[in-house]
Image (cartoon, rainbow, N blue to C red; front, side, top):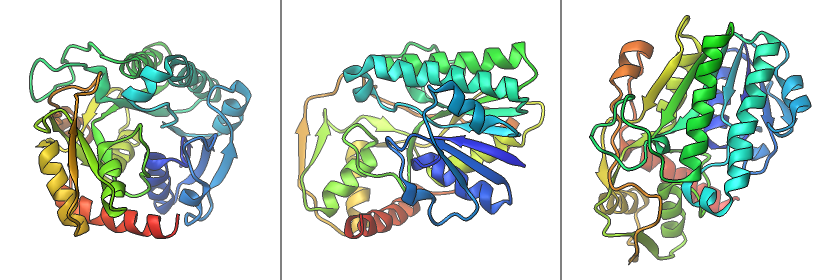
Length: 310
C-alpha cells in the first residue's frame, strides 16, 4: 500500500506516518514545515519528505501521483489563530483541501481520509454529540473545517473516490509541542514543567473530551482500510473531564505543584464537549484504548525530554 500524508511532519501526521510505515506501507509526506518538524520523521526509516504547500497545485500533484491512500492532515489549526488570521485559515483549510481533492481524483487515489474537527459544531445543544448534531461553528476555523469536510464528501458522491472525514475532539500525545494557539494539554504541560504559572480561562468547569493520538492513529488506519465506506465520524474518547480536573491530572503526571491563575472566558470556546463515538465503533470498529491518566504520563515524559533536548 502506498500512502501520502499531508502535514505528515506535524503532531498527528507524524504519528500516522510511523504507524503506517510500521505496517509496511510506502509513505510520502508533503509538509511546508511551517508547524511540522523534520525531527518528527527522523526516527522513521524509508519515508520520503516533499517540502511543499497544499496550496501549490504542482507540489500536491507530484506528491499524490501513484498513491493508494491520502491522509490529509495539513491545516491551519485552532479557533484563536483563525480569529486573528481568517484569510490564511481559509486559504489553507479550504483551498488547500480542494487542491488535495483534485490531485487525488486525477491520480486515481482510492481513499482519502481527512482531518476534520469538533469545532464544526459550535455551541452544543445536546450531549453527547452525534454526527447529526446541528453544525453552527463559532469561529472561522470551524467554518473552514466544515467547508473542507463537505467538499470531501461531495467528491465521494461525484467521483470514483472514497472519502472519510474524521471529526477529532481534543487530541493530545507525543510530538505535540507547546503552541499558544494549540491544545490546552501541551500549554499546561510545558508551562508546569518550566515552573511557569498556568491560566485557566473562565471558571475551569468547562468540560472536554480528550483523545490520545494513538487512538486517533488507530481511527485513521481503520478508515483507510474500510472498503466501500465514505462519511463523517466523531473521533474522541467518549469521556469528558473539566479543565480544573485536567490541571490536577497533568500536575500529578508530571510530579509538579503548579501555580494556577484564572482569566476571562475566551471567544469561540464552547462550554462543554463530549463525543458520541457509536458510529465509528459500528462502522470502523474504532475503540479507544488509552486512558487519560496513562496518556498524560507518557506525554509528560515526552515533554520533559523535549524541554531538555529541544
